[in-house]
Image (cartoon, rainbow, N blue to C red; front, top):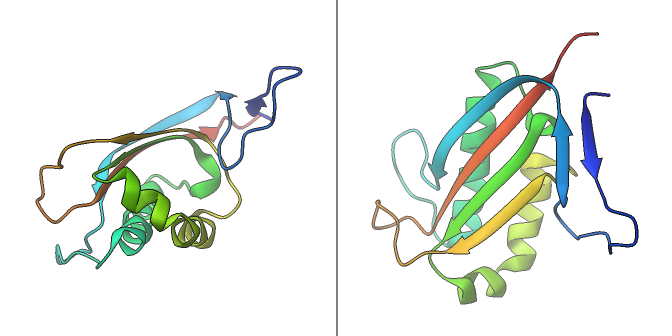
Length: 133
């Protein structure tokens, strides 16, 4: 296996992300994606924008022959911590429906604003397609 989850002994297992990942293979870097579709129409609400953002990431990964299982890192930028927590159940459901049960390393950061005024979330992704052995 060329993707290994790093879990220090004695540390509690995190929920919904990994503390670290070691990976070997072809690296794919996905620019920050936001919650609009291919016509640049925004989904309504944070959870719906998260779903669209994750779908956009999956579409970019597919161009490299990768899928959600290859994601090793996600960095989330949200405009409201309160809205994030209020919609956490729906966000989690959208995450599992789009990305499955892959839980890479993650950071979630609240920002004052994103460049597109209607955007509530932006997510960057890094993926690694394992080398053929």
